[in-house]
Length: 199
Image 1 (tube, rainbow, N blue to C red):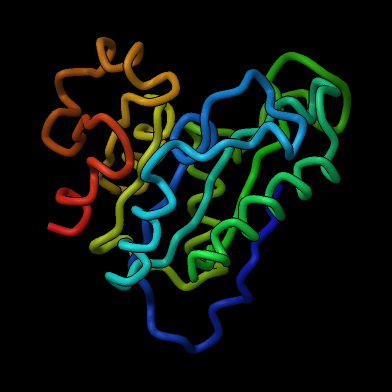
Image 2 (cartoon, rainbow, N blue to C red):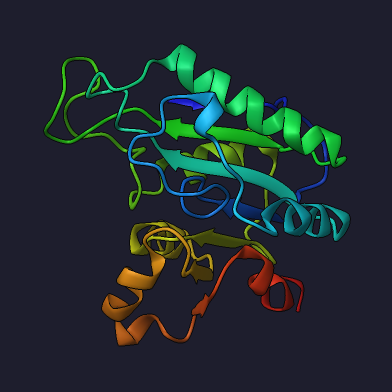
């Protein structure tokens, strides 16, 4: 279910966090990305992560990866993609506190990954796991993604959300429920979200 890059919280002070979707939010949307060489950062996203880290946020990636259930990529391939992502960030002086993924699909694929789970967004299972393992506080924290299910997962634990128009976001913006407007912002990309996240 998860591949955290940080250790357990222990007695450390609670940390505010930016919970980030991956595909379409940090990197260019690719239909079931299954090759580290095809990983491409969305312009400005790496710089935005550095700014958020410098502001004291823990950076946590929360990503649905149902391609694993469907046999389109393996856990090993996913690890290689994330290793590439983290190596790029390390050159910028950025370290992710954790990377959490859901390998399941509710209907497609084979056991043990086919069927209902508690970790596939919009369910908040991975958010709660990250909170417990990384010592996160929801006070001052945000969730950012290109899908309404990202925002919905955040709302389930009381997090305000930012919907970015990269990836699927521009299409999904039109379906944003009016009642979410009080806690959901819509911006062009992660870099454009900085004034909101830092404000």
